[in-house]
Amino acid sequence: MPIDSSTLRIGTASLAVLVLAGCAHKAYDHSAMHARHHGSMHARHHGAMAANAAPTEPVKLSASTPTLSSGYKKVAAPETARLYFVNLRNGMTVNSPVKVIFGLSGMGVAPAGMEKEGTGHHHLLVNVNEVDANAPLPANDQFRHFGAGQTETSVELKPGQHTLQLLLGDQNHIPHHPPVLSDRITITVR
Ligand SMILES: [Cu+2]
Image (tube, rainbow, N blue to C red):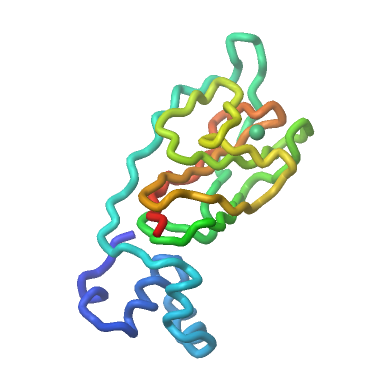
């Protein structure tokens, strides 16, 4: 998100506005939210946002084909499907454990093993640089599956920078066609 330099000049009061802007709240929400909460609560609740955060490099994603070489037909995803982090933004500084809320629109969530059109389950990719879009996702600390249909989690992360990304998988943990991914973000854990 472009941040106007004029936003950066102001003092503490604007920090909350800056944090709110990072959370994509609309301008008209600011005054109402300020009335309800003190600014510092925003910073604690949403995490501080680095104003100069560089965009995170996209994951290296192999080409997706509708059918795998095994003959497996991948589950189709509508072009309008959108996967996103509800409570985290690129450049945020947060405490561990990190709460992560998964946002999905244009598709539904179903547990792993359940075949249902237009659905999938969430995967949280932690410090993953490459993804094979035509294979079942591995299951380990970097590829975390939420096969019960969970839509949020809490992850323990060591202090420092980490990348996070969401990726939807079908009943067999295979990405859809086309793959449904969130933006890849970098967060700093205190
Ligand atoms: Cu899975």
